[in-house]
Length: 263
Image (cartoon, rainbow, N blue to C red; front, top):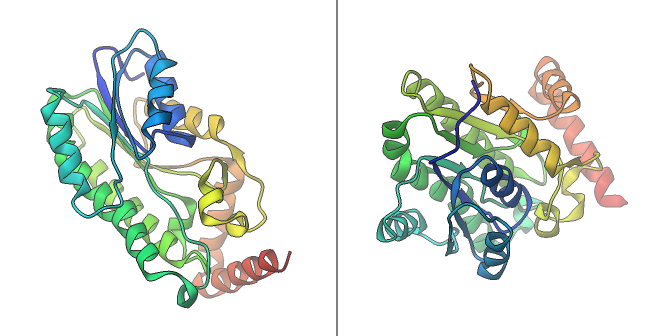
């Protein structure tokens, strides 16, 4: 059953670019009002100007700061809005050997990818469940399905997102709220401008439009899955890694990342 986004208000984090901006465009076209959150308010305002016919509220906030989840909830409450759907898209990765990574950068990564996502989910999930008919999408990654050398912290944070979201899927059954973890592979977004171009391991990047379209198609299904790996090749790769076992998979991933670094 297709999600009816008319008369809904969807909060999207990390909405200034990439998957977040595309979710905003797709859901606005489906009639949803929006609350767009990111650090770069100029981009949010420009995006809002592209979306006639719906009400768009922009909130400039750095969700990598401690307590950001509570601050965001307070800002939404002060605006008098009731959030009925939530896309937790904000996140970033660090690509390096762990012992060479900047300690503060690691802390920010965990705060944004794990702590703020959890706090935001908790702040709004009661509203989402009370409304019924909305969605909660937490953006994970195929990196969350196995340890990833040179992306150690990022992969670990996405493993949390995957397990956390699937648990919420089970808890929310029968409430009318559709919950899903979205796990893209390498995607053509600004992610690699931050993480580093070698973070994709040399694999082909899927278009961001395709990822978002697949996600919305899954949400429109009568039985939305607890998690979605986008793309047949990504699903085959994760399936193969499970069959191969963790030791073999780690050796293969480590060799792939070392080869990428030498290019």
